[in-house]
Length: 109
Image (cartoon, helix red, strand yellow):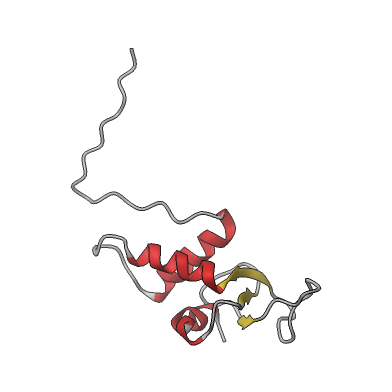
């Protein structure tokens, strides 16, 4: 299973689980959804992987990404990148401005 597969099937798992993935996290990275062991070790089957994110936090990242303006891609790769961004930066991806948005810059005095 890949990270993209996990994201595609995220609704099949409950929030008490976590996502583990092979480093240099990418949509094609090997991945596993499992309960985090109490002792902090890796769950069975996660050899060569690292903890990525809890499912509840991944769902939060996906919901935020799905709320972006419709002109932005919503393929599984973009959704994986939203989850990875949240895992790395502990923050949601910055929401892009609409193409017709006007930004006022402060004037130096």
